[in-house]
Length: 311
Image (cartoon, rainbow, N blue to C red; front, side, top):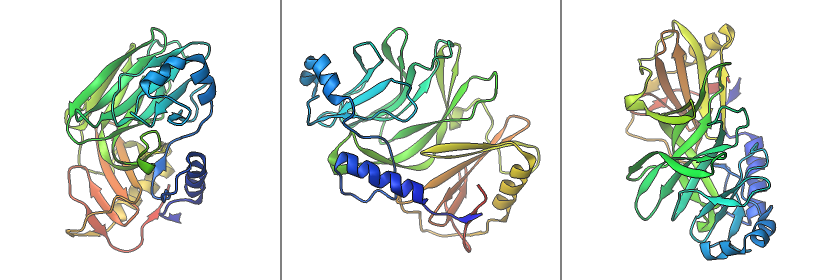
């Protein structure tokens, strides 16, 4: 049990990233990605033509997420152009343009070869107001759209813990986005809700928005729970043990709230709690570390008393 707050580990990581990117903004309230100069000189030496796409010693950054197995992503702070590079191969363009461009990226396995050399990503185009989800196929080397729409929206991918023999599933979160020092290669995100899921089956990623999800979104109940998935922007934990399920569902049951016109500030972590039932239905609860709670489709309410996390 611990009082819900930003952890010391996140704070340390935020300051390390701030140092790498030379940025001075406060980062303790954001989940931030990598932003370094690692491999930039080598990339530009191998592909000098990238200068015409906005990549220079000053503007090019390595934004590769952790665990990408040698695959690297580079982004221009000038125009938010992003390229992906596989070991031993030249770069390939991702289908993006204008700021802020790429928001998040995860590895997936389109070909079912167990190599996880394909990149699933979310993006937003500031000029055309287009946002969506794209995929880069590492075998055939092309970038394509999985889902796109128009308006003011930012999406973020989090990989769910996959059960053995089941296809890859990614939670799609809605987030607020900050460009530190107006640099679209150096983003900070705060989760605000759930947009749906992406499922990769037989080489094809499919986006299932919450309103048209393949699963039924039901009211929160406490019987027949199969597993509980807790997601923030930077991690996902899945609980399947009966003791964990009883502990977390009991915590949710005990939360007391009161009606309020106040809404949570965007400077805190949102925990998205998916309660999955034996019949395949799902309930979503949202917990903001500023002391707010809501169920899927409902308004935020103020929590009475101190919130303590059981996870």
